[in-house]
Amino acid sequence: MRAGWVTAAVLLCAAAGLAQRFFQFSHREQGPRPVFETKTEFHFVRLEYTDLPQYHRRFGYSSRSGSGNGWWMMDWPDADEHFTQGIQRLTRIHTGDPHHFSLTDKQLYDHPWIYATQVGWWALSDTETANLREYLLRGGFLVVDDFWGDEQYETFRRTMARVLPGEPIADIEETDSVMHVLYDIREKDRTIIPGTRHLRPGPNGTASAQYPPGAVPAWRAMTDGKKRMVVAVNFNTDVGDAWEYADAPEYPEAMTTLAYRYGINYIVYAMTH
Image (cartoon, one colour):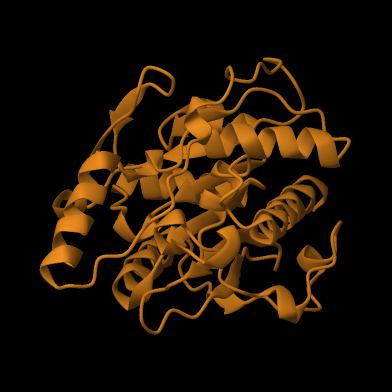
């Protein structure tokens, strides 16, 4: 599937006389898969969900990664595994093997923190909506990531209006505790974290980024009735790619560092509030 996307992109650019070189990331070929413990205090949990029918994608991965259906799989499993290794190195949290659960799986309630990507293309059923609401109101924490532009944001906003009726989606202030619970994240750090699709080779092996027109990053949140943050919103930015390509020398190290700091702050906040 990825090869098909690259081929299509090259053909379109060549037809327009605007062909550009993309980085060739090779981290998937490097070394064995990491081994994690199975029962620990924290597991990275990726959320499975129903796609909008018109945008549904079937993802085919190599035997290294398995296979499956749906946008929820984007960056899986490398992002989950790399970030879990980062948590092990950078904190005292006892981490285990990453999981992925659907919103109808009762095991979801055993975990304080879940991650969902590409939420501009989800279409939660009434059952999924009700279960996500119950998860959040029981004290769970959701991080959403890698969705772009007004149309995708509106899809996400309408869904969350069903999940948490009457609760606004507000910008996270620099003074909010989630920005300082472990790492201090300042206003200057609120920059777009690029996906690999945004990167172009620059001089001397450096990378330059080209983003969709009008893309402005936003770091937002939703709270429950007690004003406790329960949803962290990474909009117009791709934290998952920064985790996924953490071992790729072509990906900007500073962006991986920032992505790890955001993710770990969210986890520590979720486990202490």
